[in-house]
Length: 147
Image (tube, rainbow, N blue to C red):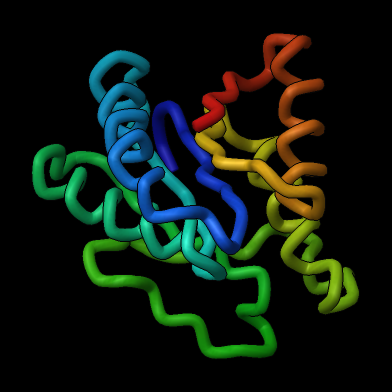
C-alpha cells in the first residue's frame, strides 16, 4: 500500500440509506484528501455497501487500490471481491483467538490508516473501534469521518 490510506468500518445492520453519504465520503477522500488506498471487511451490510461503493469509485479513479481485510485468512478461504487489488492479514493475528480476530484486525487497521470512514450507531466492536480511533484523532494520528 502506498500513499494515504483509509479504513472503512460500520455496523453489521447499517441501513441502506447510508450508501449515498458513504459514496460521497469516499469521493471526498480521493479528491480532497488524496487517499489512494482503501481497506474494508466483508461482514455485514455496511461492508457490502462499502465494497460496492469502492468498486464504483475505482471505475472513476483507476489508480486507487482496494483491499479486503481478511482476519480469518489462515482458517478460511478468502476471495477478494472483483476490482480489489488484494487482501490484508494483519501481522500477529495468528496469535489471537478466532473470536478476537475481527476486533484485533480492526484495531490494526486504525493504527495503520490515515483516515477512517465509519457508520456507528450501536454498542459493540464497531463502537469500541470508533472510540479508539477518536482518541487517536485527538493526537493527530488519524482523521475520522462519521456518517
